[in-house]
Length: 108
Image 1 (cartoon, rainbow, N blue to C red):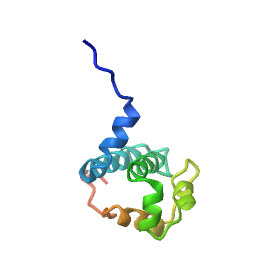
Image 2: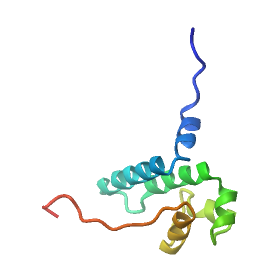
Image 3: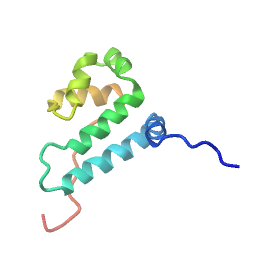
């Protein structure tokens, strides 16, 4: 007997409610963007962050951050170009933070 499957996007958004899953997902997107030499605006990372924000709820994030609802949508849109302070505020509201790390490759 076949069980009805759930759409991928629904499962993704549900999984991103777990902070550890969200961190792994965002780091993977950031790493993939860094490997794409043609991409300078980190579109994959911003799309991933939008998915995480959707899991948290845009209205909820607007209530617990210093960003407004429409501002969150705008900064995470395909044409979004968020300031670092906006990213920091959004991540802070989710209990996450920006971090700097050494590159692994010695040829850099």
